Length: 192
Image 1 (cartoon, rainbow, N blue to C red):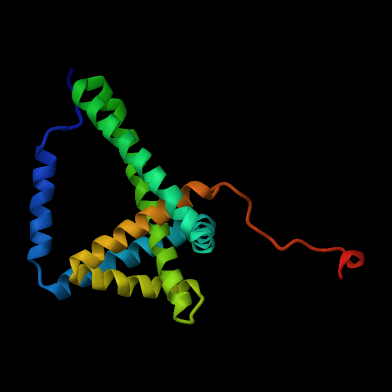
Image 2 (cartoon, rainbow, N blue to C red; image 1 turned 30 degrees about the vertical axis):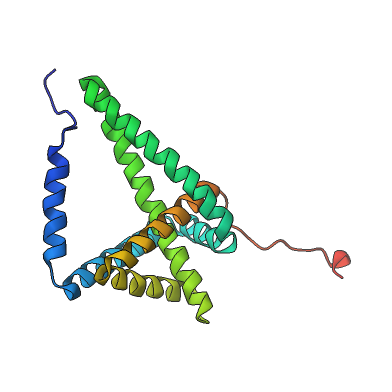
């Protein structure tokens, strides 16, 4: 079959490993600045593209953090299994690789959005504990946390895992097509 097929060998991972090594060869301040800039771009993009969905997802993750994290663990496992099955199928057939490529792209996009929601929720959670219960403070807090994680990789790994689990749970629990929430008007004769 002529045309473009998904490269499912080890070569893409080896190229990615080269970029990974180059990133870790940077000075700590440059790594932190790069990761902080990426986090700010992700947060601004999420707010711009999915304002209601991101806000509702982060709010739901903050209010129900334990159940959202447990649900996120299950969803993350199923998500990883789905990506693995698609990747395996793509290695077996050219037709499957043509079908798997756009699906894998969509799944990767969903993973980025959900992890971003988790990062914002994590930042809002920490900011609320510090006395600033606001989305702007939440984004500022997560930028600082991610910057620390870029300097200290174990902290960064823990933050990324927590954000992914929290975000996957919040993403699956939040309806992206729901109407904006409005306050319900209570009739005067029913007020107590």
